[in-house]
Image (cartoon, rainbow, N blue to C red; front, side, top):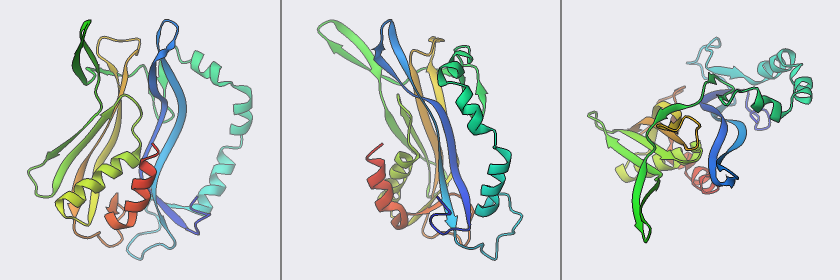
Length: 234
């Protein structure tokens, strides 16, 4: 992508991968069935040239031409491997665990799933309750932003909520520190019949972007149109 845009370098601002995107409560004959859709996502900043303030050996900056050549040389066997190993075999070999590309996890961490309580003619029942929490920190202009849902949370959705908060507080840019994605099984459900996702970060509001910053700093007016239109699709 960077090559097609004429960029010579790029910086990974946020990256994540996944095996599972949600659990369909009605798809399995004997109960909820996990929906597997392995994939990976990256939020990156493209650079047409290297700013003078950034050293060439800074490992956060990736050279497009060098990276393309190295990937071809180091991953020459991947195409042949994918022909010989089926997705079904990969899942069966997982021993009911969820094996991520960046790390191998024996099932998900266990935590109570956020729920809301409801009543109908049959009595009280609970259901997973997606939500967003914004907590102001002691430092002015800093907030903790947390989003949870029973399906995978797109980085675009997180950026969309960040834009809304920046607009609400009257800031033109923001930085995302400690941006992490988490996955959980509902507590006391070791078979992972209920899975939920949470993404969180410290949102640091700013009136301007630091020159040549390699941090995940976003200028609201630069990303607003693309983020809001794209996030509506996810």
